[in-house]
Amino acid sequence: MQSLLVTGGAGFIGGCFVRQCLTSSTSVVNLDKLTYAANPDVAELRDANHTFVHGDIGDGDLVRRLFATHQPDAVFHFAAESHVDRSIDDPTPFVATNVTGWVVLLREALRHWKSLSGARREDFRIINVSTDEVYGTAAAAHDFTVADPFRPNSPYAASKAAAVHFGRAFFQTYGLPVVTTTSSNNYGPFQFPEKLTPLIALNAMQGRPLPVYGDGLQQRDWIHVEDHCLALHQLLAAGVPGGLYNVGSGRVVSNLDFVSMICQFVDELQPDAAPAASLIEHVTDRPGHDRRYALDTSELRGLGWRPQLSLEEGLRRTVRWYFEHREWVEKVESPGYGRQRLGLGEDSAADR
Image (tube, rainbow, N blue to C red):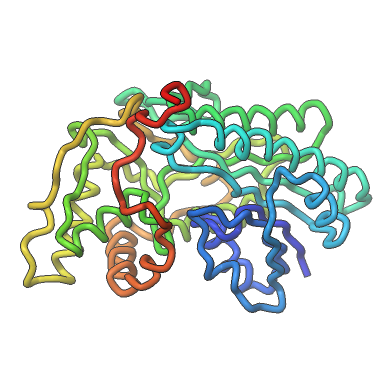
């Protein structure tokens, strides 16, 4: 049986990946710090092939023990501070986890990989799940390729870009077989309500304002989290060490159109309520807000992967999930967070 070490496996994307693994009889050691955005349902999964460990990737002794005890065949790295708005208010936790914690994990993975031999050493991979935000803003007619330079424009994106560079350095310097992905915007069930999809869906269901940053014409490629995780399985099987792979659906829409689609699906579920789109409010734009993300996924598609869900079908399913699981939202929303606006820099380190 294949054994995987998954970091951040109680998060939105990591949790989806763990659930997929457990349907294929893969053994998963799930290391998660259980920060505010973690999904406690994943941590509490009762499955013979799932071992949950509450801990920090920055704890080198703990990570070393996990490698020694469980002898994983591969590592999938999801653990990260991920909300752009929070990074604007305070970049420090993003550096601590996304850069320093990742380097600790790389060092311990290198130690483990050097201890392997034969096919286990040859087949070992450490897959770093990153974001298209490392590229910055795409020109109107350009889809980012893996050859494009990184030009991050938010503290979050800068931390993820630094992590990609460290992964490349460990491959080039030590030979550690790091595979890196840069993914477009994910949506799906079990996402913490600070992110756009659940925020808009839940507010619309409750008749609350629907904040749209700036003019709402920022463009994003949206991929369902299940399709993203299927791509990661494909990369474990066929990804080339040292390789960089863009993961996206190829469907690029404006934020305003995306919000309007959510409103349409909420209206289908609540036909007697006022039209959800009437709740849209344009608010002050995010500082350094990128205007467009779009990805060329040729390398990944060359390995045989294709997204399975259209944006319309995936988003309709997602909105219905939040409609039917509002008790889950009540359980995970952290104390002090009421879906209020973050990321205006009003609580930044420079202001304290």
